[in-house]
Image 1 (tube, rainbow, N blue to C red):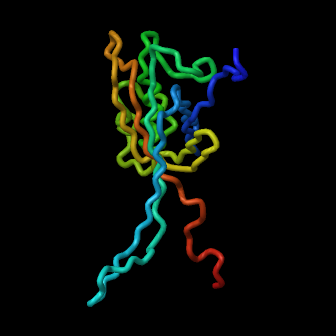
Image 2: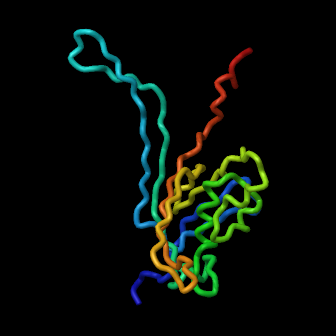
Image 3: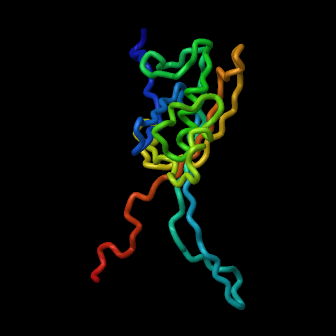
Length: 190
Protein backbone atom coordinates (compact mmCIF):
# COMPACT_ATOMS: atom_id res chain seq x y z
CA UNK A 1 0.00 0.00 0.00
CA UNK A 2 1.24 3.53 -0.80
CA UNK A 3 1.33 6.57 1.47
CA UNK A 4 -2.31 7.23 0.63
CA UNK A 5 -4.62 6.03 3.36
CA UNK A 6 -7.81 4.31 2.23
CA UNK A 7 -10.83 5.71 4.02
CA UNK A 8 -14.48 6.51 3.45
CA UNK A 9 -14.85 9.93 1.85
CA UNK A 10 -16.80 12.69 3.56
CA UNK A 11 -20.42 12.90 2.46
CA UNK A 12 -22.31 16.06 1.62
CA UNK A 13 -25.77 16.51 3.09
CA UNK A 14 -28.93 18.60 3.33
CA UNK A 15 -30.40 19.25 6.77
CA UNK A 16 -33.71 20.93 7.55
CA UNK A 17 -33.90 23.84 9.98
CA UNK A 18 -36.79 24.15 12.42
CA UNK A 19 -38.59 20.89 11.52
CA UNK A 20 -39.20 18.20 14.12
CA UNK A 21 -38.40 15.50 13.27
CA UNK A 22 -35.53 16.91 11.23
CA UNK A 23 -35.02 15.98 7.60
CA UNK A 24 -31.47 14.76 7.04
CA UNK A 25 -30.26 13.52 3.68
CA UNK A 26 -26.68 12.30 3.44
CA UNK A 27 -25.56 11.98 -0.15
CA UNK A 28 -24.97 8.29 -0.81
CA UNK A 29 -22.74 9.35 -3.71
CA UNK A 30 -21.41 12.91 -3.68
CA UNK A 31 -22.37 14.97 -6.74
CA UNK A 32 -19.99 14.85 -9.69
CA UNK A 33 -20.27 18.63 -9.99
CA UNK A 34 -21.78 21.50 -8.03
CA UNK A 35 -22.91 24.60 -9.90
CA UNK A 36 -22.51 27.69 -7.70
CA UNK A 37 -24.05 30.66 -9.53
CA UNK A 38 -24.54 34.27 -8.46
CA UNK A 39 -26.22 36.87 -10.63
CA UNK A 40 -26.22 40.64 -10.19
CA UNK A 41 -28.83 42.80 -11.92
CA UNK A 42 -27.92 46.12 -13.54
CA UNK A 43 -30.44 48.67 -14.79
CA UNK A 44 -29.95 49.92 -18.34
CA UNK A 45 -29.75 53.72 -18.63
CA UNK A 46 -30.41 55.15 -22.06
CA UNK A 47 -30.06 58.81 -23.06
CA UNK A 48 -30.39 60.54 -26.43
CA UNK A 49 -27.12 60.63 -28.37
CA UNK A 50 -25.33 57.95 -26.30
CA UNK A 51 -23.32 55.46 -28.30
CA UNK A 52 -24.14 52.66 -25.85
CA UNK A 53 -26.40 52.45 -22.76
CA UNK A 54 -24.88 52.82 -19.31
CA UNK A 55 -25.27 50.15 -16.65
CA UNK A 56 -26.30 51.09 -13.12
CA UNK A 57 -25.89 48.56 -10.33
CA UNK A 58 -29.37 48.14 -8.89
CA UNK A 59 -29.18 45.35 -6.30
CA UNK A 60 -27.46 42.18 -5.29
CA UNK A 61 -28.69 39.02 -6.93
CA UNK A 62 -29.25 35.60 -5.52
CA UNK A 63 -26.74 32.79 -5.15
CA UNK A 64 -28.01 29.52 -6.56
CA UNK A 65 -26.41 26.15 -5.92
CA UNK A 66 -27.43 23.21 -8.10
CA UNK A 67 -26.25 19.62 -8.13
CA UNK A 68 -27.35 16.07 -8.94
CA UNK A 69 -26.92 13.11 -6.61
CA UNK A 70 -27.50 9.42 -7.25
CA UNK A 71 -29.52 7.25 -4.87
CA UNK A 72 -29.08 3.50 -5.30
CA UNK A 73 -31.02 0.92 -3.31
CA UNK A 74 -29.20 -2.07 -4.79
CA UNK A 75 -25.51 -1.19 -4.48
CA UNK A 76 -23.68 0.00 -1.40
CA UNK A 77 -22.28 3.50 -1.65
CA UNK A 78 -18.78 4.49 -0.48
CA UNK A 79 -20.04 5.39 3.01
CA UNK A 80 -23.08 3.12 3.45
CA UNK A 81 -21.60 1.74 6.68
CA UNK A 82 -21.72 5.28 8.13
CA UNK A 83 -24.93 6.67 6.64
CA UNK A 84 -28.42 5.26 6.48
CA UNK A 85 -30.09 5.21 3.06
CA UNK A 86 -33.75 4.32 3.56
CA UNK A 87 -34.52 1.12 1.61
CA UNK A 88 -37.35 -1.39 1.77
CA UNK A 89 -36.74 -5.16 1.74
CA UNK A 90 -36.58 -5.18 -2.10
CA UNK A 91 -34.18 -2.23 -2.36
CA UNK A 92 -36.95 0.32 -2.97
CA UNK A 93 -35.90 3.91 -2.20
CA UNK A 94 -39.28 5.71 -2.07
CA UNK A 95 -38.70 6.67 1.58
CA UNK A 96 -35.26 8.11 0.77
CA UNK A 97 -36.64 10.07 -2.20
CA UNK A 98 -39.42 11.44 0.01
CA UNK A 99 -36.77 13.01 2.25
CA UNK A 100 -35.71 15.15 -0.72
CA UNK A 101 -39.34 15.93 -1.59
CA UNK A 102 -40.01 17.09 1.99
CA UNK A 103 -37.75 20.10 1.35
CA UNK A 104 -40.22 21.56 -1.19
CA UNK A 105 -43.55 20.87 0.55
CA UNK A 106 -45.08 22.92 3.38
CA UNK A 107 -43.52 22.08 6.74
CA UNK A 108 -45.25 19.32 8.63
CA UNK A 109 -44.30 17.09 11.52
CA UNK A 110 -45.91 14.25 9.57
CA UNK A 111 -43.48 14.26 6.61
CA UNK A 112 -42.27 10.72 7.49
CA UNK A 113 -45.81 9.35 7.00
CA UNK A 114 -45.66 9.92 3.24
CA UNK A 115 -45.70 6.78 1.15
CA UNK A 116 -45.60 6.30 -2.57
CA UNK A 117 -48.84 8.26 -3.02
CA UNK A 118 -47.27 11.63 -2.33
CA UNK A 119 -47.52 14.54 0.07
CA UNK A 120 -50.97 15.89 -0.87
CA UNK A 121 -52.71 13.48 1.52
CA UNK A 122 -50.92 15.04 4.50
CA UNK A 123 -52.71 18.34 3.91
CA UNK A 124 -56.18 16.95 2.99
CA UNK A 125 -57.71 17.85 6.36
CA UNK A 126 -56.58 21.50 6.09
CA UNK A 127 -58.44 24.11 4.04
CA UNK A 128 -55.32 26.18 3.37
CA UNK A 129 -51.67 25.43 3.98
CA UNK A 130 -49.67 28.57 4.74
CA UNK A 131 -46.51 26.99 6.11
CA UNK A 132 -43.46 27.50 3.92
CA UNK A 133 -41.19 24.58 3.11
CA UNK A 134 -38.38 24.24 5.64
CA UNK A 135 -35.17 26.22 5.44
CA UNK A 136 -32.09 24.05 5.02
CA UNK A 137 -28.37 23.81 5.46
CA UNK A 138 -26.36 22.53 2.49
CA UNK A 139 -23.00 21.16 3.57
CA UNK A 140 -20.39 19.99 1.10
CA UNK A 141 -16.86 19.87 2.45
CA UNK A 142 -15.97 23.32 3.82
CA UNK A 143 -18.99 24.87 2.07
CA UNK A 144 -21.85 25.39 4.54
CA UNK A 145 -24.76 27.41 3.17
CA UNK A 146 -28.02 28.46 4.82
CA UNK A 147 -30.57 28.09 2.06
CA UNK A 148 -34.00 27.12 0.85
CA UNK A 149 -34.49 24.29 -1.61
CA UNK A 150 -36.36 25.76 -4.57
CA UNK A 151 -36.44 22.80 -6.94
CA UNK A 152 -36.28 19.02 -6.68
CA UNK A 153 -36.38 16.91 -9.82
CA UNK A 154 -36.22 13.12 -9.49
CA UNK A 155 -35.44 10.88 -12.43
CA UNK A 156 -36.28 7.28 -11.48
CA UNK A 157 -33.99 4.89 -13.35
CA UNK A 158 -34.68 1.30 -12.29
CA UNK A 159 -37.57 -0.45 -10.49
CA UNK A 160 -38.00 -3.57 -8.36
CA UNK A 161 -40.74 -6.22 -8.68
CA UNK A 162 -43.13 -3.97 -6.71
CA UNK A 163 -42.47 -1.16 -9.26
CA UNK A 164 -40.80 0.96 -6.59
CA UNK A 165 -37.72 2.84 -7.77
CA UNK A 166 -34.39 1.32 -6.74
CA UNK A 167 -32.14 3.81 -8.57
CA UNK A 168 -32.69 7.50 -9.14
CA UNK A 169 -30.96 10.78 -9.95
CA UNK A 170 -32.04 13.67 -7.74
CA UNK A 171 -31.45 17.17 -9.10
CA UNK A 172 -31.47 19.80 -6.34
CA UNK A 173 -31.49 23.60 -6.61
CA UNK A 174 -30.93 25.73 -3.51
CA UNK A 175 -30.94 29.51 -3.04
CA UNK A 176 -28.78 31.02 -0.32
CA UNK A 177 -30.66 32.87 2.41
CA UNK A 178 -29.85 36.50 3.15
CA UNK A 179 -27.05 36.56 5.75
CA UNK A 180 -28.30 39.81 7.32
CA UNK A 181 -31.57 41.29 8.56
CA UNK A 182 -33.15 43.01 5.56
CA UNK A 183 -35.21 45.42 7.73
CA UNK A 184 -33.94 48.86 6.62
CA UNK A 185 -35.26 50.60 9.77
CA UNK A 186 -33.04 48.71 12.21
CA UNK A 187 -30.03 50.69 13.39
CA UNK A 188 -31.44 54.07 12.32
CA UNK A 189 -32.39 56.80 14.76
CA UNK A 190 -36.13 57.28 15.23
